[in-house]
Amino acid sequence: MSFWNFLINYRAEIFSRTLEHLILVAAAMLVAVLIGIPLGIALVRRPNLRRWVLGAANVIQTIPSLALFGFLIPVPFLGGIGARTATVALALYALLPILQNTYTGIAGVDPAVLESARGMGMTSRQILRDVQLPLSIAVILAGVRVAAIICIGIATIAAAIGAGGLGVFIFRGVAMVSNSVILAGAIPAALLAIGVDILLGLVEKKLTP
Amino acid sequence: MNTALGADGLAVELRNVGYRVDKRQIVSGVSFKVAPGETLILLGRSGAGKTTTLKLINRLLETSSGEIFVERRSQLEWDPIQLRRRIGYVIQDVGLFPHWTVEQNVAMVPRLESWPESRVRQRVREMMELVGLDVAKFAARKPSELSGGQRQRVGVARALAADPPILLMDEPFGALDPVTRAELQREFCELAARLEKAIVFVTHDLREALLIGTRIGLFAEGHLAAIYKPDEFLHSSDAEARAFVDSLGAEEGRERSSPKVTGRGRKA
Image 1 (cartoon, each protein chain N blue to C red):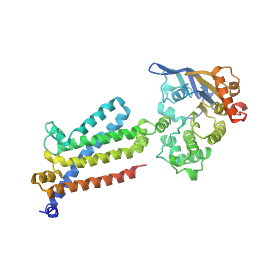
Image 2: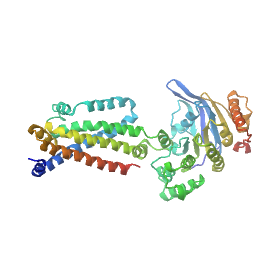
Image 3: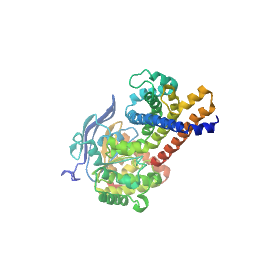
Image 4: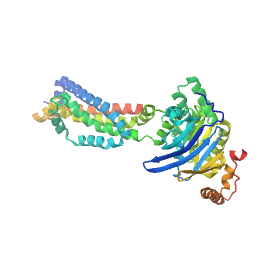
């Protein structure tokens, strides 16, 4: 069966797998953003915590993705077979770039700006909301963008633990020794990554002061 | 709360103030008073404790010993946020918010204090005129579109916007080119004479101190060695004061000119 025929015959499954893939990535990114950005902000104020947290995030990043999925299966609550485990693993991978960039962005705000903000009587909450976040939003979003691209790629491996997504085609294609089937997973995944990159790039541009 | 002060008009008073980090004593035994209409210069070499003393006044740093009174109330009775909004603060690097326009920057404290919007706008216009910036031309600009001198004008306008009775200035003109610096110093003298603020002004430039100050407090190694009237300073026998006067002479000799130093202190 040629690639094009496969695409046409399987368009419904390709569509639903793409959707599955997107939902997986979106859920993981949501978790990673909700944890990563506040944690990154906290790290600026707690230098002694910084080494440990960034170190841990770095270590997680070095674990091969297939291994991380495997490690998580026996873990209670978070683990098991399926999408929940995959979401946890993807969120862990997405954490480092978000954490790192949030920290770098906020720590990089001009000290003179902070000193005048404090000296003129802004509260720390006002400084965060009106000064630190607006001035580092571009850097933070760049981290989110990198994390999203990483997630879309790694999510293809989530099929190995029964989480679905476009990886299903890739694993099936490998087993069938069929390039068409592999491409039916790989090409939509690549397009997804490019699309998300462009989209977040636009958001970044729009929010940059 | 109003700007009205007590009968003897005391805006800031330091009593035997000290500050240390770990075991290192940065500043110790500093006492002075500043009344409205006065400009007290804190003069000294780098690391003499001038900036530290300034930051103790608006509680960017917390005193380790002694007491500071702001408008006759002990500093500890003040809410630090309220205290800082009653004290204008101008630093060498200006620290304008780069993502805000000039108008927004100047309006910062009035808006924090939730002034009605019409009053904020009017105040911004007044302040920009006060520091010599054309409202129509500059209000909508971002700090990156200003020259160094214009930026510091905005910095002064911002510090004065909420009409604080006290103004702290940390080498505000130190980063400017000599011509712009002289221009701003001159304008600032006129401004200070008109506004009746209590000003504490940190510098390491004796010429600036003589021009702007009504009194000059000389810092050496974390102590306030003495407070002089500007003309007294030139004839002081104190070694550190002499060192400053000599450096002035050296500079003037190099420039082969003998400008007469005339400041606000001389007129008094």
